[in-house]
Every structure is written in C-alpha cells, then in structure tokens.
Length: 122
Image (cartoon, rainbow, N blue to C red):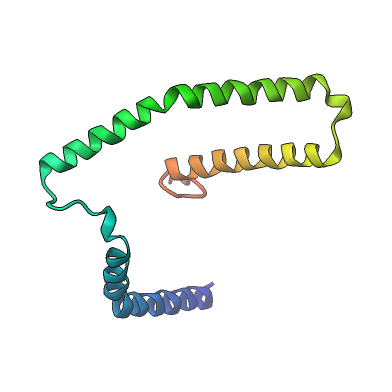
C-alpha cells in the first residue's frame, strides 16, 4: 500500500510540473482560439444580459423538447406492444441504457456524499 502511495505521489508531482510549465500557454491558446465567444467589454450589465438571453432561450426550447419527449414515449410504447418481435440487438441496447442510467445514479450518489466511496462514521 505504501508503494502505491509513493507511486501516486510521484504521478501527482509529475502532472503538477507539467501543468505549471504548460498550463499558462494552454490557457492563452484556448482563449485565442475561442476569442469570438468573448464579449467585450466584460461588464456586469453585459453578463446580466447574456444570462437573461440564456434563460429565455432555454425556456423557448421547452415546447420542442416536450414534443420530443412524447414522441420518444410513443416509440417506447410501440416497442413494448410489439415486444415479441424484439431483436437481440434492441434488447442489448435497452439493457445497456438501463445499466448506464443505474451507473449515473451511483455516480450521483457518490458525488452527493462528497466523493467518498464508503461512509465510515467512527
């Protein structure tokens, strides 16, 4: 266990050195490539305007997402009615989807506990 800890410390030190050497350069490159997304001047009023635009744009997209949801639900109902014609591939995709949902649930639970795998209360 101690050897694993020293290996982990060495890797963390290696990554830390890499970030300290190249992090600033990466940041500048990233901003240069995405300069067209940056609003000038960056004022509080502009930030408030952009946040309102985002909110109302998302609200405007609700009807189309609502319709898409019901279309997907109708598709699932259709498949459930004709489940005797279900292929192995479709069943595998459904099983993988269910497994993915369960995995996201588990990850959410772990994140909700503060990224602790096991809760020990001494």
